[in-house]
Amino acid sequence: MSAWQIVAIFGAGIAAGAINTLVGSGTLITFPALLAFGYAPVVANVSNTIGLVPGSVAGAFGYRRELAGQRRRAIPLAIASALGGTIGAVLLLSLPASAFKSIVPVFIAVALVLILLQPRLAAVLGHRRRRHGERVGPAATGGVLLSGVYGGYFGAAQGIMLLSILGLAVDDSLQRINSLKVVLAGLVNLIAGLIFIVVAHVAWGAAGLIAAGSILGGLVAGRYGRQLSPVVLRCLIVIVGVLAIVRLL
Image 1 (cartoon, rainbow, N blue to C red):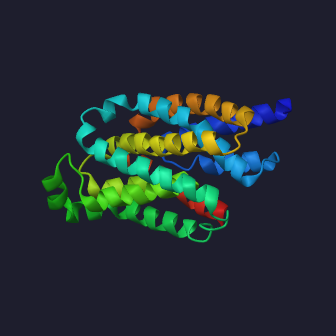
Image 2 (cartoon, rainbow, N blue to C red):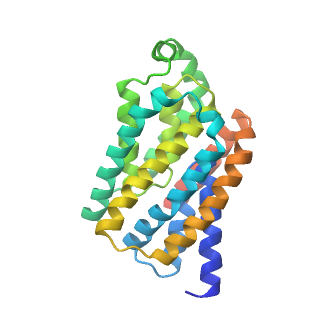
């Protein structure tokens, strides 16, 4: 690995760690970077998934204040995420690489529309959300499970999907919802990564560089991203989501 490759992959890791903490879609930076340096698609996907786990831990640490008091809702959603990540990882190792390619941009577009409409939809669903309180309903748990399947399979824009699901299901501020998203998406990567370590080929040099970069990016985003207003954060989510759709298409 040349010095240029080391710097580029490390830099991609920083950007991905920050974006994953703020929004979700960091894979769309690191995955193409690994492909550009000659890594096979499955190896790149596997190595990228493993490398981004430490960045999620760093992002969750930065959002620890927003995470306080969310244990009751987080536990069932974490179980759903872990199950979904397991299924998605198995699918990655058994299905053709192009299996989800055509449908992924549609998923992201729907998630963006839901995020844009979230304040209005939240008002309509306010009574139901207040009734659940700290708990989450079966529909939200099922949605998180499906997003975990997608995240274990590929992961690009999984955070955006989670934000749209949680935004409709949870009666809380966008920043607190985002902190929960960081944990759930990171858990999916962790579960999928553990499976990949056992049964798949990992490019450990690239994964290590992404991990180091994502820690730095996650810490910076966790420190400053939590200060963004809901309007700015929602705009950032939409911008990243649109770029993700363009990139995938």
